[in-house]
Amino acid sequence: MENVLKGRISGNLQFFQEVFVQEQYFPKEIIKLGSEEVFCDVGAFNGDTTKEFLEVTKGNYEKIYCFEPDKKACMDLINSIKSKNHIEIIQKGAWDVRDSLYMEEDSKHGTSKVADVGNYIIDLAPIDECIQEGEKITYIKMDIEGAEVRALQGAKRIICENKPKLAICVYHKNEDFLDIPKLILSFVPEYKLYLRHHNVSGTETVLYAVL
Image 1: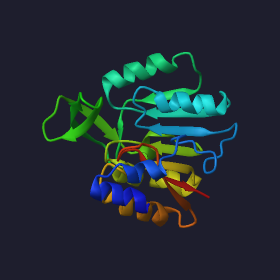
Image 2: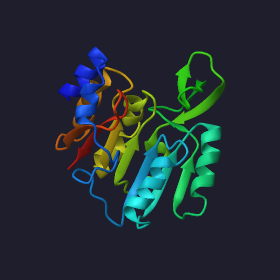
Image 3: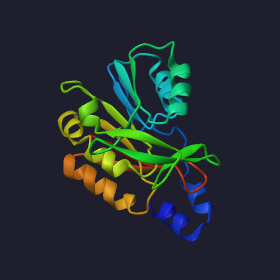
Image 4: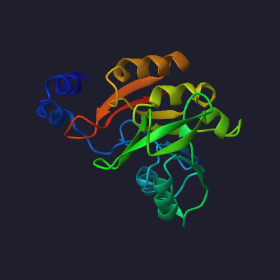
């Protein structure tokens, strides 16, 4: 945590390089996966994390939910996992209420972000409303360009009831380093939290929560 904060404040990449670890979203010392996992990939993009989940589990899992509001990314996602079973793609952005927002493409980084006026509109919905009540989610990953707090609030029921493993990106906004762990612990106080940095630059800092 100290190195990540020093790196963000100073811009000195050496601080990130000293704590950089691989295995993003699946560090073996933190995330233990079984054969009955129900994985919720929030910000599925082109399926890169879902494909890694398939590799790590060797295809032994219960179900995967992929949340991805971007139309082009959704098409890439569909093409990348079309031969796999028990995967449901939800073309919505995770949020705390049903809504719609303008999105602006960032061609330099291959991502999109919320904007007052953008290239296209996306639909938003709470995860709690998109996943049927009674479905036991075991692992939630979120990398959604700064919308993580609102998405977590929209997944409160699932988190409180299922107490799934969590991997939540906290690097998009400075305040997320404090707000996200506080929010998660307000849902499930017994969670143990771990911070890992998965890039040699200032991005890809992930907060893990497990029991």
